[in-house]
Image: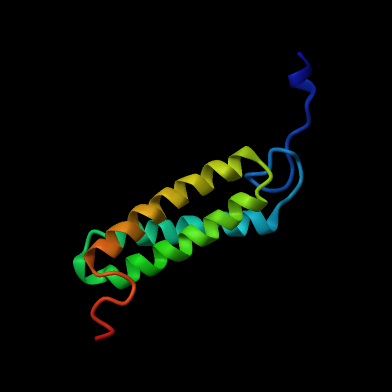
Length: 104
């Protein structure tokens, strides 16, 4: 019954170690927003610029977030955001890419 005496975790929602992680939480939120944006806009051919750039930024942000992450919960959210960003990035690249229709 030792777990019944364990204090509640204070600080961040994603911090299972009882400490707050503002940088990691910010990276998680940014990665999730960019991932959802890239994934949602990737289904429209005309939004390939948005989906490819948001996907690329989401991949880079998520990769850095994985590097500095501390807890498993942060890593789980980052993987979800990274996956969505990668799908959005690759579909955006297939529909025209980062500069498709802008240059040349």
